[in-house]
Length: 166
Image 1 (cartoon, rainbow, N blue to C red):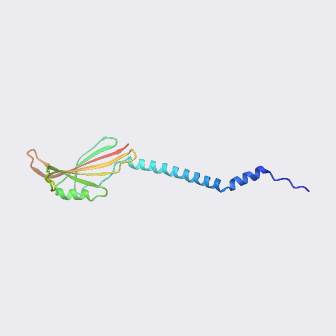
Image 2: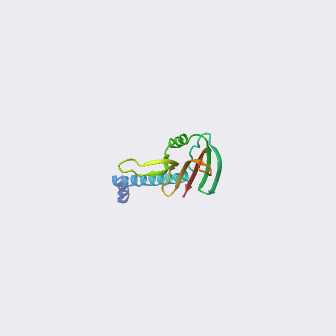
Image 3: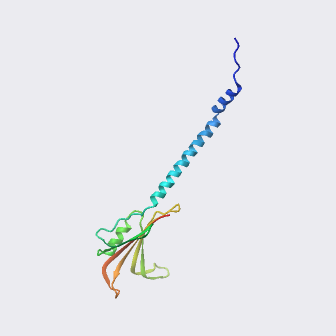
């Protein structure tokens, strides 16, 4: 009885798939494809999250006096409170990722010393999560209200502007 010769083609195919280099290349290709898919999903998730207004807490007890949506991707709310300016300012400054900066009516440079700053005009607080071509930030301006004679009314205006989208 004679044995049939083993096909050289089958032997080559089997050896090719058993090659360490081929297995490694296939593993790298699969990992690359998985990373691309995960990256695309993460990017679209990021975009979806940035395509809505960024929420900030409203000062407790502040009364809403004006609200408007000027266009898709921008809205504006205005609140009034009779609480002290410093308390309202501290409330917003304590919020996560919020950065606040006071603006003064008078700033006088003094060589070798800190500048003299008088009469707070307003404090601007901002939180910004913009990135990858997407805009998402909220700006809060806190300012004392004055009457026509520039006398303080005792009210504090809290102006909230939110921007979002591409």
